[in-house]
Length: 283
Image (cartoon, rainbow, N blue to C red; front, side, top):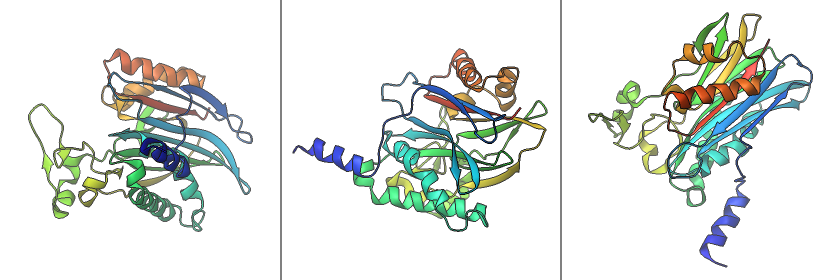
């Protein structure tokens, strides 16, 4: 057996699957007025697609859960693929998820990162950002993120960001306390150790001493004022403001059509990155 074949068998063993289809939609079974749609588009870079996502409903005990996530990989797609297969599983198996939700989600993120680092021989030296949303019985959103993929809700027509962009310039003191530095070269974005343009991420073993994988977590009630949720990778947010994204799809009732439109708008504004997005419509 060749080295390449051995590596492939190891990848299968740790649960690296193929990417999701490029587009799709669905709706809740008990919350039938809630629909979701997703769309992905490969960017202009030479490397393979590095974005992965989850967009589905499932039953957990007596609860209906909407599970939505964007994973934006870098230096390879294997870490993002691993997250697609394992992160929600690790979150929901936390014993205190229903009682101490924010603590449980943070712990699951950190434990997942530890597992990724342990398997760096298989998963490679790359990493991934993540933004996740768990919709509980159509009434409560649990948002968590590391990196610069973003969660935005439309509330009475106004965009409101629920996630936090983890930019190196904002976390410079933390990075320097851990022995790293933030470069700020002319014509480039700030980077951790001159390499990574986000201050928090899964994986990235060579930089992990200077990076955090602890997520910010927000719990948001879904009332009659929340119209829809957007989760998207930075291929959208580099070229569109939160309000521009909301305005571009507010009048589109079909969630999948809205997700496709959002990516079309980003491409028309010269986005060259891989792009993935999920739209969850509440009304």
